[in-house]
Amino acid sequence: MHSPLETAWLDYTRAVIVEALRRVWTEDSVLTSIIPRADWLLAAFPMPFRFLKEPADDAQWAVAIQRTSAFIGLMLSPPLTAKDRQVEYSNWIEQRLAAPTRASQPALMEQAIKTLAEFFEKLLEGDSTIPLNLRKRVVADLARSLHPNIERQLVDDSNVAATIGVKTTPVVVFNSTHTLTVESFVAALRSALNRKTKTTVVMGDASKRDVKLQLTGTGTVTIAFTDATFTFSEADLLVPTKAGRKRALKRVFSQTPLTAEEENAWMKRVEAEALTAKEYTDFVEHCERRPKA
Image 1 (tube, rainbow, N blue to C red):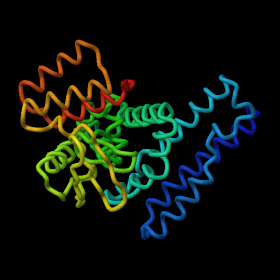
Image 2 (cartoon, rainbow, N blue to C red; image 1 turned 45 degrees about the horizontal axis):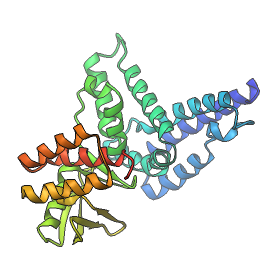
Image 3 (cartoon, rainbow, N blue to C red; image 1 turned 135 degrees about the horizontal axis):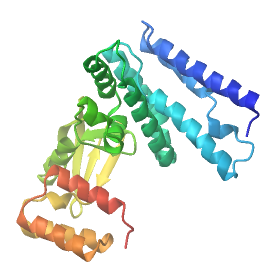
């Protein structure tokens, strides 16, 4: 590890950069001026795990990860500024920091989310000078300005959302780059199953995008954005016929076996009626976490 003097200097540098980022994003400037400077500051940020003298040392690594997650967690929260600028900041920090961390070091991202939750909780702690309702409103506004991917992790991993009354729209995330509402995603799959070739989907930030659809093979649907294409091989679980759903489920089980109890429960479910959007996405996510046959 570093000497106490080096550690103090690095921590001070990190704090200065975090404060500088917040100042940049609260300026009354255009994005084309803000983003290059914010990118430069983030690139200059001395991530603790990059400064280990002995990376193989478990104790040093644990301390470095703790420090790194603490600073990332603080940076996930948008600054206190106009709503549209908060959203722009959240989109930037998701693209530049959160998404790469989530993809390469998910455990680190989980720790950062815990830090973010603790930060929001501290803002809610007793303060006789500021009414609790006002503090809750401020924290709720910050939480609603988070990028949908970050907001969903916060809701899933902490109780702070319930405390401040934040309700989120269920979303699905593809490749850490494209976030769609669950209802819109499943509606697009159903459209493709009905042989439609295009539709409009609702993204996690409530914006809308036109996509192209293609049905290929047995229940395989491709959704094509202008900047990415995603393929889903279990779309026929959503077909209206019982026979079609059972056939699709048997194929999925042959590729990704579940426990006998789970398979029986899901088979009974598809025999009864078509899956809801949430049931479909929950099932697919559950299968993705299981080993393939």
